[in-house]
Image (tube, rainbow, N blue to C red):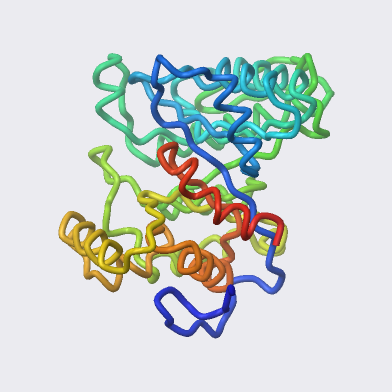
Length: 329
């Protein structure tokens, strides 16, 4: 039985949105076991009821996102595919626009394009790339979004900015979805959330990145999430009601043991320097029985407007009963 109480029974009285979207779920494949069958994995994700297979964009031991998603889309029929998220600094937006349009066309309009400003400084260092200050990277991302949308418009497009110049180009091929695939933007910092409020279709809530390129673990509390949603609402204005809000779950463990749940929460609290209560109530942490997790997700939707939940690859099978319980509701 799903109830509207908050996580661990805390009451929630003020919803973040007036219209609650139905739940859907994504699976992020952050790693890659070279022994498994990629098309079969995609079919399993689809069969278990997940909406979207998502691939991140890092320079370590993982598949390149766009080719991997093309193969996943070819192996499935209804599964959506998405980047979670492309690092804008790794590719010119003209190239991203063409490759994303091609994937959207070949998949029959099943692409969600996530793109971000980049945050993992160590990858830039290893690749010999300059990791510029956050405001510069965010400004460059906003220009890239303008280029993407311009090239998906079906009209001749030009752009002259501080970071990109495009002269009278027509994007070809055009995406299958009118005006291009849904744009996924997000993060934890105010500049990124403001950008998402202005331009995104889907907004992902994530811990903010520090200037040294490391995620801030304490930025996952309910209060921090409240502040992000408030900032998003302020920047989106009338668009806010049309935004889909996604959450990046950092830890997922479905267990019927209350002792194990308490142990896991205590372990995370010590690791992140937070109180167990804050960890337990965080929308980024999913630990408990199917009933507990379902109740918590309903409470997070009521409080924060989160209806699109992304879980990491190891939770594929264990989280499936939650997907079966809530997807589409």
